[in-house]
Image 1 (tube, rainbow, N blue to C red):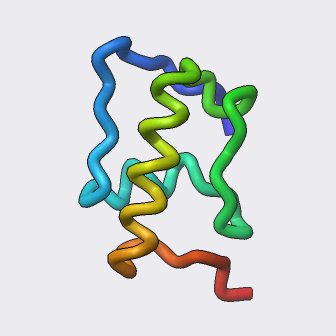
Image 2: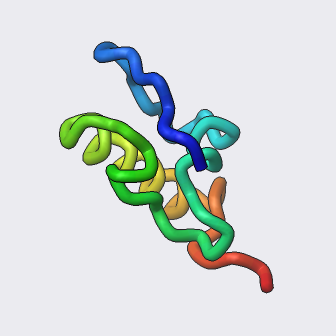
Length: 65
């Protein structure tokens, strides 16, 4: 995955599953900052959004392998 050009005002919404899936690998794990290219604050916001989406069954906890 290439680093994403980020907007400093970028906001991650837990309902935007298509965007969140870009930051999750094939095994369902959240990509690290080194791969996403996000700032620490954005990475924390991303993690919270992904965890909320998982809790509401919008994203799977693990891959279907």
